Length: 169
Image 1 (spheres, helix red, strand yellow):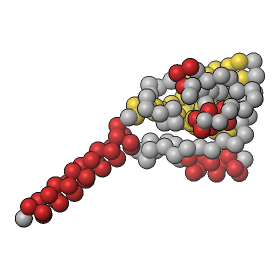
Image 2 (tube, helix red, strand yellow; image 1 turned 135 degrees about the horizontal axis):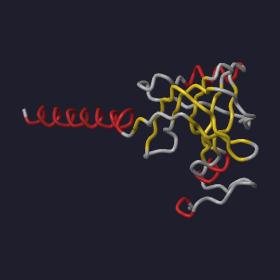
Image 3 (cartoon, helix red, strand yellow; image 1 turned 30 degrees about the vertical axis):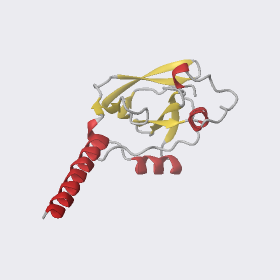
Image 4 (tube, helix red, strand yellow; image 1 turned 90 degrees about the horizontal axis):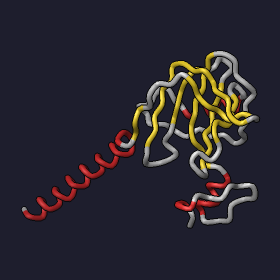
């Protein structure tokens, strides 16, 4: 009987631990962002402010890759900086406004265009926006060449800013 109890205890603890880990990864570290009426994006002359509506956003202090935002741009869109190689990252299933597969397909087909929101925010990660002609916009972070090299321990490419001291290896 003792062996069955020990095995059951081990399985029970593993199930509780696994359920806890799942919850923390999918729900626990995210926070819903406050609605916004404007959004700053990179522009040839610095930054430009877009007027927006229907903002939904999530973020997490645990990783720079967890930011996602969905909104509609209202009014005119100034010339923005195109972003090559944009690849939307999946959002948690409960954040239903962001569908990475649909956004990625729209970028490939030309139904949407990728633009830079902010470079190195934080260091090594760019914020990218998929912008549709009807004003729908979706934002996510993506590791850039500077970050990929730095976090792999390789020399950063020419033109990269120096990494912050707290992130130096």
